[in-house]
Length: 125
Image 1 (cartoon, rainbow, N blue to C red):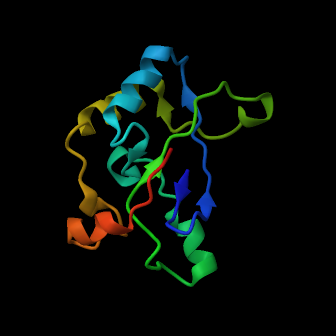
Image 2 (image 1 turned 90 degrees about the vertical axis):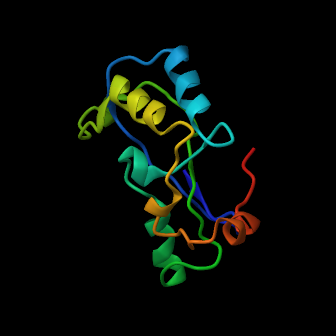
Image 3 (image 1 turned 45 degrees about the horizontal axis):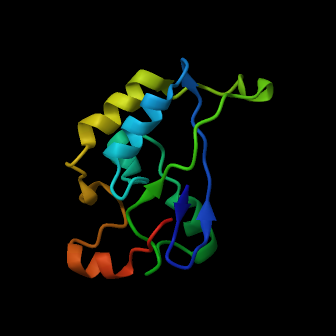
């Protein structure tokens, strides 16, 4: 999910190959900033902020760099035809590689000054 500072949301899903475990879910959350926040571009996940750009005429002051993981679930039969993003193991590996080394500048919403940016980032709970 991507949620801007005005609480407008854009949702997305990834189809993964393989079964996930509680350990996988916990490893991903432990790798995120603040348990859920991550830089989609660093993981190789399609960014969702562009969905909101359509409504605001492009990036606005409410846009920020973080996406959030909401949940893992088993695919529904009608979703099986989606193109898989990759494996569960690949997703866990990408998050583990980024842990503690998030590159904020990969986001198109990175302003270049982290302290200016942090004032505008909403807190996810």
